[in-house]
Structures are given as structure tokens and as C-alpha cells.
Length: 456
Image 1 (cartoon, rainbow, N blue to C red):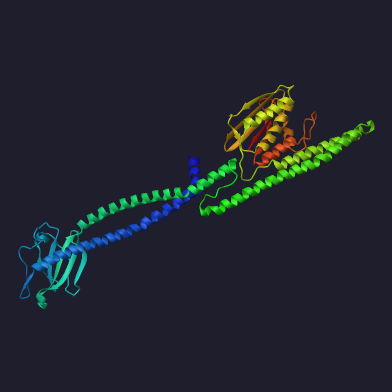
Image 2: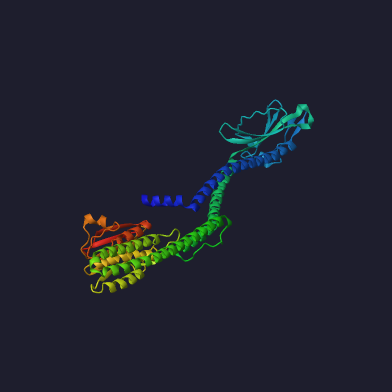
């Protein structure tokens, strides 16, 4: 469980699209949180304006029904608005004189006690909120008016309604607001994900082209990419061209060097044979010939070491079965007297992530040693596991003592003195493996001999 969470965390950290999506999600959530109080405030303002307009209309109904007689207020027994006449109605009406004394109240105000004391101070109309003795909240709309334009007939016309209606409306609005903002956030995140996915199609195309370059299916990247990526693709193409040209120059230089050294060595070889024809010069001729052979092998080793290197961008993959077919056919002819049996333990489709020439040189040296030292049985195992390629070449020969294993991996060191050679085969193998960031291990084999294990 912990490992799965760690892998998920690494994926989130390493994925550019997930990073952008996470950042966009945080920004969208913060935007919605900032938008929520603004929408709530706007609704409250609109709600109070609606309440004010309604109460203003009801106040107008009271004003139209009011009369004065010698400065005293006269109200009809039945008001035009029926809500003022019903005892349990939600619309309340009060009229106060200029000293704040209650001079009239509608029948709907029965059992309602609101501690509101208006003052006739020339404020005009005002919308307020108050609470009665039972804790109920009311909206109050207070209008100052001079009936018949007489100073003695100045009154405050007050209409009220409970805030419970608007509170229920506000609660419903907030539920709907949360619902719609949540849906809007999900829709926005879906659009952002779609936009990022569409925008990253170009990167997926670039990744596919890079995979094709690594596998050798194409040599260069195309120019069918967004403008922002053309600088990158152009630089990669120049790097690919430079790497390809450099490899070609290396190959040509190595071919020229091998050709230039081949002729002098041949001349020296011929001179050695002439010298060896005289009995008194045979010892010197043998020494000279031995040194010429050593020079030839060392030159070959250095040429192989310089040429069999992992390329920078191109990732090769070679079928192991085809390479072994070629090597085993050749070695079976060389060691036909031994009748060596080769066991293969790997899938037929297995491909090794190396250049073909490097793999041929690596397996060629290991198999040649196995054929030369085995009693009659060689086994080759290979598999891809834990992100690495594992190859093992075993034989049923005498094996290698534990205290001698490190020594034979060094250049020029040999335990087998009965066969010709300078001991550079395993050194070449080790150099090739190290150039691919791999490791070489020498162990005991179940067959009884040595087991060379390669991990790339």
C-alpha cells in the first residue's frame, strides 16, 4: 500500500499535465470561493430591494386610505389590502405621530409586539430590521409623510413583514448556489482536463517520434509541431545529425587506422618468417612473432573498445535468438570435434537493448570462452526483469576459482595457458557492458563450470 502511494506520488510529481491540472484545480477552487460571497451579497441586496419595493407598495396603500380631521388621523375599518385586515397575516401596518406615539395599527398586528420607536426627523423613507420580544426578525419600512401638508398632520407610516419568508428563500438560494457552483467547478475541471489533453497531443506526438528515433524507425524529428516546440526539435535534429556524422567519422577513422596498421604488421610478419628460416634465429623470431601477435590483438581490442559504445539518443534493440543463431553456427564449426550442446532459456521474441555489433562482440567472447572450456554443454539464459536485461552464459567446464575471478576480468589476464590469446576477450566484454551502464558478474554454474552474468 505504501509503495503504491509512493509510486502515485512520484507520478503526480513527474507528470507535467497532472501538475498543470492540480494548479488549475487550485485556482478554480479559489475563484469559486471568492465568487461565493460576491454572489451571496448580490442576492441579499436584490432580496432587500424586492422587500423594500413590496413594503413601499403596501405603505402606499395605507397612505391612500388615511384621512385627517383637525390634525387627527382617520383610518377606515376595512383597508383595501386584505392582508392588513387578517389577524394571522404576515403584513403588518403601524402609524406613528411626529412624537413617536402609536396612533394606529392594523388588525394583522394582533399578538405582535415590536419594540420600534420611530421619530419624525425628516429622513424620508428607510428600510430597517428589528426583532420582537419572541425573537422573531422583521423587515421595517418607515415613511415620513405630511398628510394634507399640515404641520399638525405629520406621521410615520410603518409597514412590516417577517424575515422568515426571506430567510427560507435565502436558504433555498444558497443550496442552489452551492449545487450550481459545484457543477460549474466540475464542468470547468472537465474542460480544463480536455484542454490540457488536447494541448498535450503535440507532446505525445513528439514523444512518439523520439521513440521511433530511439528504436531506429526514423532518423530525424519532423517539423510538424507547434511553434513553441520547433526550437527544441531543431536542436534535437542537430544533435542527431552531429551524433550520426561523428559515428561515421569514427568508423572511417578506425577503418583507416586498421588499414594503415595492417600493412606494416604484415611486412613484419613476413620478415619474421624469413628470420625464422635460419635455425640460429628461431628464438628471436619466436619472440618477435609473439610481440607482433600481441600488437595485432591489442590494436584490435582498442579498435573494438572505441567503436562498440552506446549511442547517445538512438536506442537499439536486437533479437537475441538471431544473434545466437549466427554465433552458434560459427562456433559449432570451429569446435565440431566437441559436439557442444547449447541450451537456450529465454523467450523467442526477447530483444536486447544494444547495438547489434556490440551484442555480437559481447556474446561472441563469452560463448567462445564457454565453447573452448566446456566439456560438452553450454547454457544461455536471458530475461527482462526489474527494468533491466539479464543474460547468463554458463558451461560445464572446470570453472574459475573464487580468488581468481577478479583477476581474469582485468585486461591481459588469463588462467588458460594452453590456448593462444592475450586475455583481452573478457576485458572487451566488460568495457562494452560498462559503456551501457551495466555490470558483469562471475559465479559458479549449476552445470559445474563458470557462469558469466550480465545485467544491462
